[in-house]
Length: 404
Image (cartoon, rainbow, N blue to C red; front, side, top):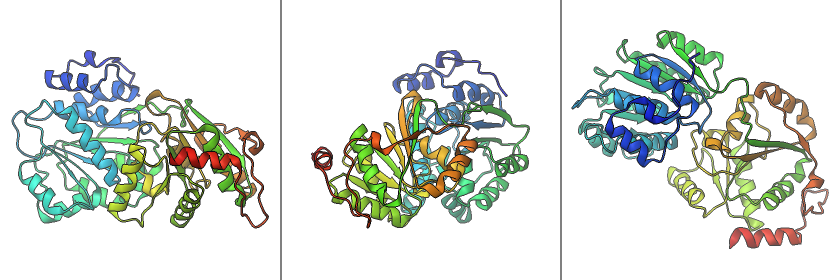
């Protein structure tokens, strides 16, 4: 494991163009993943970077990627693979901000849901860096509009998410089509066995930069769980939002149907909530994200698949409406808050028969999730045995607060 050598961007001796861009972005100190990864990448090493979302991974590979571009080149030299359209857009936008003073760094995002002709026109102008999702990258490969002959670097961003989403065969096909002497950079919040299988096939003596350490969850996240009956979940969710009044909350459900029902129930109670899941059209997904980012909706209810690659600053609370079915999903869910050193909260609603499952998650995540009583939350409502809840004065206040 590499020791962290640099502490400030000034120590990296970057080109003037990148120094200026980094200063414009307001960055002075390196994050641990940047401190560990950037010198190794500049030295031509393959790396496995283990760090959670929100730790500055894009700059960790983006800075050396731009520094290593051939002067006045026209051909494709670097490719970034991302699990979702949202992450591809975010990564390309950040790389463009980094490259704003470099006149020869044409960066093109390619992903599904966007007219392919627009992407074809951008690629014809001479893309130096392409950021995209595996499916659309494969599409361009088959059309002959992506040529890897001069490619020198590939980045697998959030590799564990891409594997979870079933992209392993696409990833292998893409990697096999590249020159063998390329530099391969892999970034992942977790390193399961499937990731190690991938590195053995496609990396050369990779250096490990692990800033996750033994603590897989983040100390800045206040974690707690509430043991509830199934019909109590909506009531407890509302009381959590009323009690802590986060400016933005991300609520996770395990199914699309549960997302839709939860959003409908919240809206009936007067909360500004939106939904995000795989059955929504791209325009509806974009609209939901726009409203959430701009504060028009303060609660986003999502499935794990839809939220992969979601990168929104300022999420103050993550609420697991359903206990995640996968240990790693818990880590990824709560990693959406307390980003870049900020604090955040993560609450989990657990029905009695799920307590053993919760213990497994704590063991996997190497963390302790303390139990809290629902009686500690103000505004408790009377609940009929059928599950119907009577609205109280606390809810009326919540309605006014979340609709004004």
